[in-house]
Length: 301
Image (cartoon, rainbow, N blue to C red; front, side, top):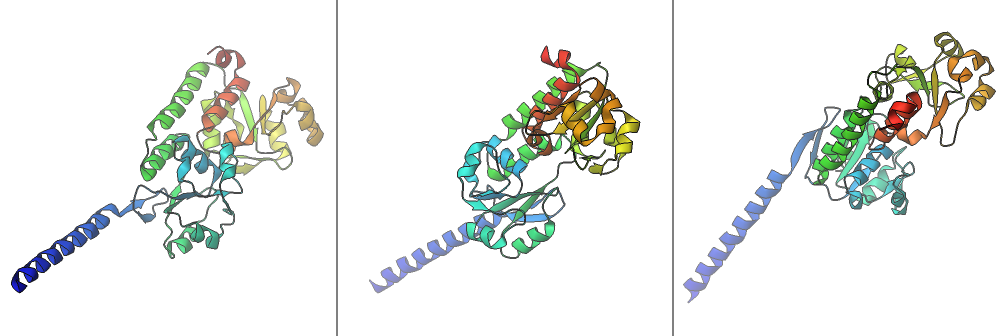
């Protein structure tokens, strides 16, 4: 009887040990090292169930792929979609490390446009993984949508394809049309603009325009009054959350009255979020730019 009991005890122990080893092996298989857009090795176990976004365009991507329920909090910069404001709050700029750790995310989404790898390294030391995205061109957006889908275990393909379809439609609508010289300004006071290596520069070209600030290397530029007067843009677009007109521009820059864009009344405002956030709504922003540059062809779609 004693031998029989001992036998069954040993068998049970072996089964438990085997199950534990199998579980550990599964965990080792599930844990992967991914390489993000900055070439950083990111150790995580996909799909991430709890995620934080350190940039509003990444937040919009998460919602666009139907994974908004994975977000455990929203930063002060998150404004879209509206339901994001119902989430608990945290600071992303600068990142509140203590609050982030407290929220216990599986993964952080970041972008090299506004986030620092130094912060990511500090968080990695306390077990919080950060995946960086980079948006050098328009194609980076659908690529990021698909990548986010993979990281969160959802299908990002429909959102990516919808984005690409809108861009293709805009390109087709403006194909063969003249390319008006265009000045895209982040604001009307200090003349911040986008350089040749920015996705926003490509956005102007995709909308059928010639981006004047391609004259500047890099992603960003600050233009001078003289530059604008010398290059005489045919269209000026100012990122503004309200309607914008040539009269408003002249209040800040009265010498621009001789510029074709001002003379012809082709000064427009477009909501900043549509062009300053490389996310799903960038496609809408490019379509709106195209409507300003080529009203008839685009509106006839």
